[in-house]
Amino acid sequence: MLPMAELKTACEAAGLTDVRTFLQSGNVIFRSTRKDPAPLIQKALDLDVKVIVRTMDELRDVIARNPFDADRNPSLLIVMFLSDAPSKAAQSALLAAHAGPEEIHFSGRELFLYYPNGAGRSKLTNALIERKLGVSGTARNWNTVTKLLTLSSSRA
Image 1: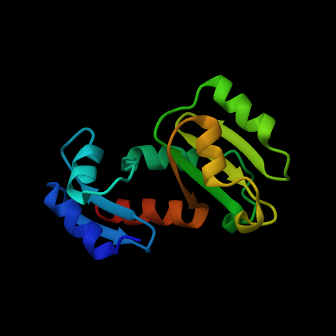
Image 2: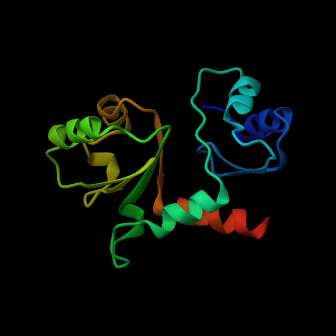
């Protein structure tokens, strides 16, 4: 587990500015003139971790693409931010391996998941998803996703 203070320091060392962390789950909000700051962050961290970055506009677009009705419990909705868009074959492999009550919606480099019984009890884990899709990913619940946009927008 990487302390958020160390993550903030690494991001600043990577040349990012106005760096702020959110929660204890690796969420960082920052400014950068770099098109893809992920490699800089990975190098500064000096850890074997995958860094997945979305711009404020991309995050806004993710929220707009939410396929679920507004009356769904937001604490049961997860967005998995993927390193790359999975192939159609990989998407089919995940759907074929899935037998639970969860709902899965693919949308570019994001995977929208609804866990009606909660993610903690599900067999549809991040590890299974990454293995079947052949891409890395990081999951955030809907409340965190919307809060990250709010925090990002307040700094724009």
